[in-house]
Image 1 (cartoon, rainbow, N blue to C red):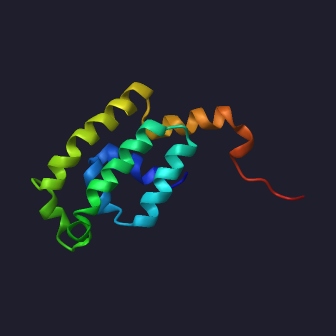
Image 2 (tube, helix red, strand yellow):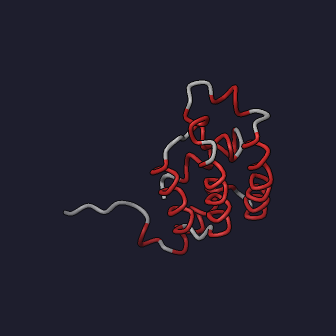
Length: 119
């Protein structure tokens, strides 16, 4: 679930497409999607997975050194734009970004949050 933090930052500073260039990792992407599911953000997880599917066609560009210059105005930015809008709508209706899902999760599952130590 901790992997969702980077996505929350991406929504705060950039957009959904930019996230895949900034965090260019298939493993992190998969962990983020699983984390969203665990947090109960299934609609957001579905949109995130759809965006990742689109990103796969542009994965070499997103992983290139100059990806930031390439991204703006790219076909990928245009393709992922509607998904970004859908995701932002979900986050806005939830009232607090991805972090709000964490708060709701902690309230629902206090036994799953926090570390325990042995005496």
